[in-house]
Length: 203
Length: 35
Image 1 (cartoon, rainbow over the protein chains, first blue to last red):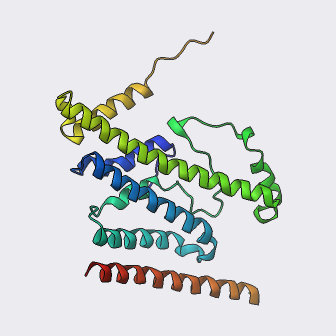
Image 2: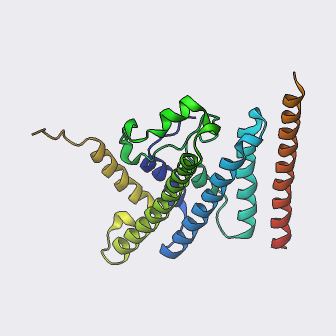
C-alpha cells in the first residue's frame, strides 16, 4: 500500500478514526495522548531492534506487534479497538527498510533541499557503522526529534480540532460541526483550496 | 556458508522467538489485569 509521505496527510489519515468516536474535548485528548505514547514506544523499539530480526519476518513482526498491543490496550482501557489504525498511519513510511535513514519531516509536501543534510553523502561513502560517533548521535537525535515532533503535532492537531468542534457547536451553533463528518467535509474543502491556490506572481 | 553467517542467522531467529514470547506475555498480562 502506498501511503502519503507528508506529515500533514498522514495526520489527516490518522485523524479519520477520531471522526467516529463520540468523544468530547477531554476524551479525545486522552485518546490522542495514548496513541502518541504508543507511537513513540513502537518507533523506538523497532529503530533499535530492526537489525536483530530475520530479514523476511520484520514486517510480519511489526504487524503482529501492532495487533497484540491493540488487543491488550483495548482490554485495559476504554479505547475503541481501531485506535491502532491511527498509530499505523502515523508510523513513518518505510522505516522498516534496511536502508532507512533519519528522514526529514515534510509538512504540506514541501521538499527540503538535500544540501542541508551533508551527512547523507558521508554515510553513503563510509557506510553506516564507520561514521564518526558524533555524527551518528546527531542522526539518532534528529530521528527521534522528528518522531517526537510528529507525536506532539498529532496530539495538538486532535486537541485543536476537538476544541474547534466544541466551540463551534456549543457556542456558535454551527450545524456543520454537530457531526464529526461535517467537520471532515470542511477539512476536505480547506485542503482542496490549499492545494489549488492560484500561483503567486514572482517579483 | 561460513560459521559466522550461520551464527548470525541462528541469533536472529532466537530473537524472533523471544519477540513472539514477549507478545504472548503482553497478551497474558493484559488479560490478567482485566480480570
